[in-house]
Image 1 (cartoon, rainbow, N blue to C red):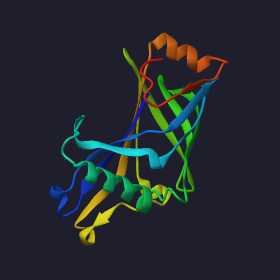
Image 2 (spheres, rainbow, N blue to C red):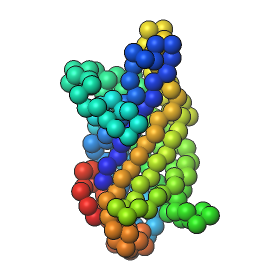
Image 3 (cartoon, rainbow, N blue to C red):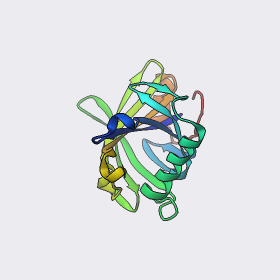
Length: 186
């Protein structure tokens, strides 16, 4: 299972900044009887590289730059020492024939409800949700007096590689199934 976060640049000097893709390294999601519960460790976010749409240039930033970005996100934006976990609780359902996860997300000490559409493909399931971090009390990052900043939006993308039949069986199973980071296939 892959959990990725995309950030988007903004501001007068946006051409000097980068859109980024980050990955969450520590999390646990448990699915049981159509209910999903989990947690994410925001301090485990790592910078994969500069995003150009769905393509990522891993070599565009030095290891030192990646580490500095990760530290800034952890300390200044997500304040991981005060808010060490992001929590998710939801129920699978259908709206207009589409699978959705009606969820409560707790981040930065704030609860918000979200409806996350799920897309089944031949390779498994993908979920994408875009939201404004400011809804959770997280201000957009700014540098150089706001000339370089991030947009007040992030895109979170989850990929689960599994056969459709296996996903359907997991969704209705009475036995809990726990998704792990980097899990290649269910």
